[in-house]
Image 1: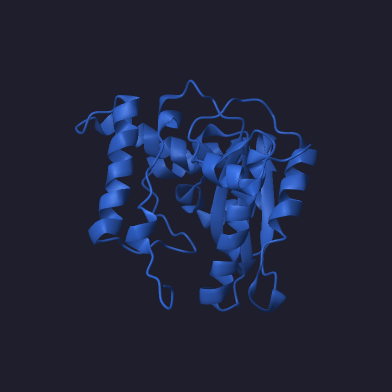
Image 2: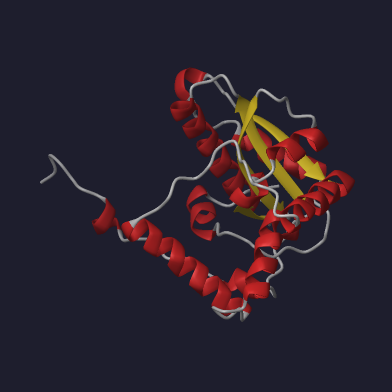
Length: 225
């Protein structure tokens, strides 16, 4: 399959939070991963490993994960996100407000908010979930940076096949369950998870187009006329 240009892929990529149930051909996933592993890594260490889950294993993960949440089991992701502040927190809140508005979830609708959290835990009900992990003994700073590059490669490569993706932190809440279902080694570090499938463009949250700060805000120039 011919892919769109890189610039088109980068502009067209967006986080998809509602998917059709249609299965994704394995050969498409293989090609996407082949593209993603061309990503650069420090000293060409290529520290990434991937577990691609669909069908009954994904159903088991989703069902048991939601069950743990309903029991208020403590979450213990291998890589816990740090607290945000200032403009970083403002931008995250703005996206959340926009999503809930599109979904018709009011501020005091605790049941609606909880169901949304469960959906995120279930890879947003995508037909495929991808776990990205590494050897847990590797130093985190540069290794996790390399895995971030791979994650972007997956998301961009998926656009070539008409697929949507969402980097899904909540899917990593229960790493012991993930390891039990997938066989990922105990000494690994689960760093990222990606939901992938064909977008359901009728799903309200998929109408969201998050904004980006302009070039002038994030860039300084030195030595240019």
